[in-house]
Length: 266
Image (cartoon, rainbow, N blue to C red; front, side, top):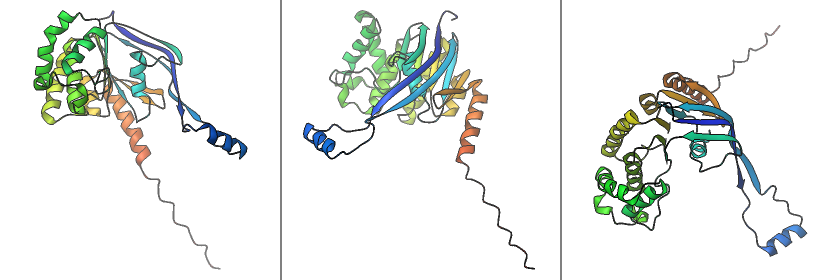
């Protein structure tokens, strides 16, 4: 297990978001003549700022934080979906990112074809993936939809298939982003049991969730991201408590002003 790792060295990730809609040449000329100023056509957003951390073999790390704190961006940087603007990212071990519902699936291909496609992308020969197709559809409870194009799957069906594929191939490093956010009670319980079995034999897991009980249940380390920076890193119970305390303090209404004291009449 000690041979597997994830390392981020002073990583910064910035995005440029374009806020101005496209205009025709005629409209642009008229605006220029009229000297209309619409401001900057884009905004720069920093998702991660100077983040450094090392995750070693045997660690199950939960990432917590508010929306927009940089949690999903961190997973995408680790999986190399996003190249960092600055800094260095490295890992050792067979890594599987399960970050969004059906990420990497081709909507025009059937569920069966997407399993083979996913396997090919991850370096598995077709013969090896053929042995996994049956168990994947059995667990996902999607046998009758095996040859149906993914574009006709509901979001829950796509997630079940994606989760089943990721956990069937047994990765050394598993990245999960809100994997239990979709599904009925029966499916969520099955997924949790399967995930626990996977954790027991995995090398590294990094897990993003807004469900604090899952972080404390599955993880032996937690990281709190705030504004793209690491606010806390340590035992899950302590990090979750600090995050909740900060959230409670933010949500509390300001104290009522003290009543004014009338001046005494001489």
